[in-house]
Length: 302
Image (cartoon, rainbow, N blue to C red):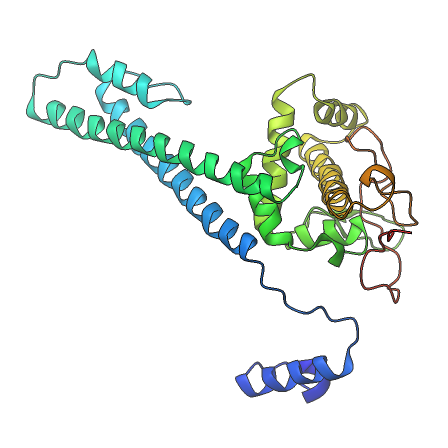
């Protein structure tokens, strides 16, 4: 709008204000900003939980660096505070440098134990608040308290995305068309909401760790079909995006108790993929042309 209205894309406070006013006057279907106190509390809690996770990772890295100098070969990658304490208990350094290293490492262990307690309490608080929203995101394999809270906070009203393709494009899991002539190809999207993209990535990683998950079976089928591991991973994330989209839509319908038993019936935009990533449709997002529908249609009570 700034480019069309002024003839150039220069960004200033004046041109921004003018462009916003033009959008508000000329464009229909704009959504009103709604302040949801529950989501605001969730945002504060999930941001705190993220910082605790970052502190935990930083301390573990520092502890590994010290243990490499204290114990030959260091310690295993997945190191807990109790395991680190046990290792340090068996170390008897004789020189001042070694004793200082052990003392600093033990201080890190104590800090890690405190972080564990705070993370546990933060997860419990998140779970309790998430349950009050009525969402079923915690029932999805690979979605924990932080992931569910981040989805609720960043997405807000899921009906602002007309289709699952729009949602995938917004979170960066939809590939970008990079075709040229007869050469049809797609490349990885580097845009989108990176918080939600990370949640979907961790969801995929968790599913790949277990051979019995349907996400793992879907990934293995893609690899067997000739896709490289990274390509199969992107396909899985795209399919999980559809599942999250459908789950959040169903949550809205269930909460509003539309239809018999609170379940949503079929619609012309229903996801072609099933509730698990075994139903294949397409690896790329193929949204149709823009229509006059600005919100996802949901059946209303008769």
